[in-house]
Image (cartoon, rainbow, N blue to C red; front, side):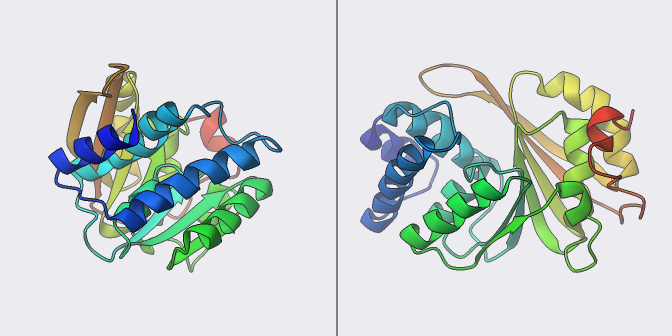
Length: 238
């Protein structure tokens, strides 16, 4: 996907980008590749692939959820900033917090945010399990996002405790989404969520399946969740 295709395909979905925003994506790409030489941020470094599989793929969430408002988002395990930072560039009014367990990635994200001149971004080095138990962050966000970090039952335990009642968990998943949803229904309900909508589509060019799941937070998450670090992954709620 070249930059013209990127602009055109987003325009088709009602997302128009200014020259400044395109310059930010270009800076994002060059900074990602530069830092990737000294630390493992991504296996994808070809420019057209980064635009397709990182930037465009992240922005598909905005085709199905309204990010055009100054809401507070928490992105769990974002790694090199996906999906929240490509979304933040397109929708500058957003307040974004990224939680990641690896401090090196947080250092990269802080450097990137300065280069991109992003405002209202916050990067926190923590495990999602301990972060979600801290009073100041628990049920403090309008939206939690995560992209392919873990199975949906595990992701729900990491993300739903962060979402306000009435808020939303937006999960970006691949081809296994339907099976994960079947296996994760009990966890979603137990943690206070309910599937609102699910959208299935193919990523342009490579034609791989993608799914966006919009999970509404209907009631407070029981205090015991998330459990201790590592536990959600080892023994998911089933």
